[in-house]
Length: 100
Image (cartoon, rainbow, N blue to C red):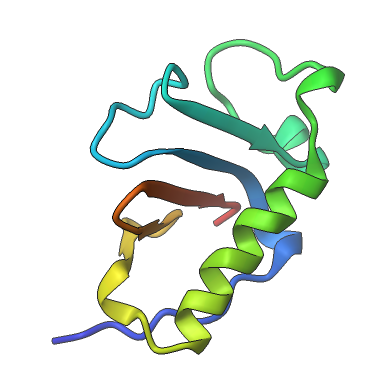
């Protein structure tokens, strides 16, 4: 059974990630961006500082994933649990963590 993924609403986004495909996602091969909502509600084990908030970068990732969904690239976009949406290309991995 295929699950249809709805377009991502930016107001639901806590954080995003953009990194090299087929690499770990610890941050050594990519970049995490946090939203103001993420700073308040995302628990990663230590505080998210003001200089880590980059809503512009987060919006770019959300737009890439939403564009892939709109263009019919459902095979490249999948949902991992109820909070994470992942988009994989040949060279990059993008994901969004949602406030659920």
